Length: 426
Image (cartoon, rainbow, N blue to C red; front, side):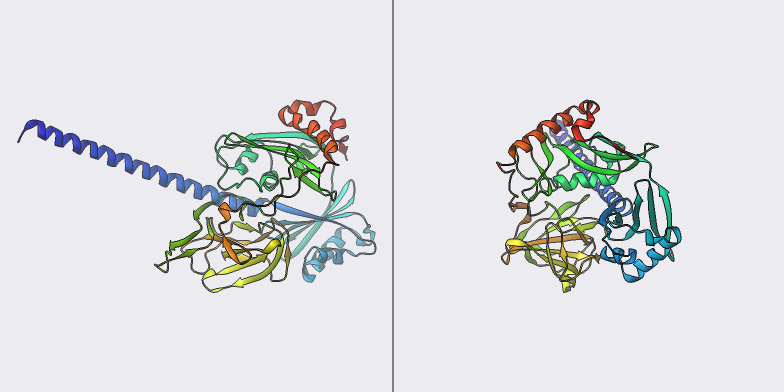
């Protein structure tokens, strides 16, 4: 056999071996990255469940007793009675004052975590669920509220970036809510993204964070594009966020039914091969791959018209919205709402699961408009109205106040009282 021909065959074999090795290594790398993303999603889902406490404040009404006040927060009669009994052992509830604030904190899953009653500016009655009932104590609340700037860089997730900046998961959640109409924090964040926030921060005298107040301005730079938000008010006087050009950031719907840590695993299709039924059929929704227990939020305000088990859909919640829109959330492991209930945009309505015809844990999300299924990934969402001409001078003044402080946090140290009122110290 010709020697040159043999060399040619050997070269081709070597080249083929190199190509196979390259493909194999790429697949290994892709597999490792997928595993890393799954671990990250699981960690964030657990962190949301364990760490994030969503507070709900109400003022005590004249003549209202403590137990009745707690029942207005959605506590059962048994829970309200147990919490009141524990509170009475620490504080005389006859001294309950109209106008004072009760704060009930729940996890994103809706689990009761704590109840706080602000006795006066210096004392807090804190009631905490424990096995077999509740415990209560009165604690001093020396603290001060000051203006701060928080900034950071995203390497893998917004949650970790905010934690790296020394802040709590609550702030990451609030930032995601502000920009949640324009950014999907599952798929949009990129390594190297940055964020800046100017806000009120309440600190105890030892420097520990006690909580966050108003976020006056925020910026998130995603893949080179800047998204900015300024706190202003809508025509009814309610707090709302606007872009620097006066357009409202709030839209009718959020960009995703999940808050963090998931990606689209199956898109809207008129003909998709069903992995269980082994046949081609329409897939009229968007699948988000996420671990069991990941909180699911309603993308818009509306009324629950169905919450229960439904054949291949498994545990499902269906919500009717304005202008003929409906949304459906399928394969849930748990549901936290019931038919007839009104829900606000962003409310946690259930947890990701794999009930019904599902090969693994994921959320199958569907949206209809006037009875027709729509592709949510390509659906244009109508915005709220911009700043009115009447309110433009006031908005322009707020913009000139806060945008420079976003870019140059050192300005916060100069004349803070003029920027946001004097610090409150207890």
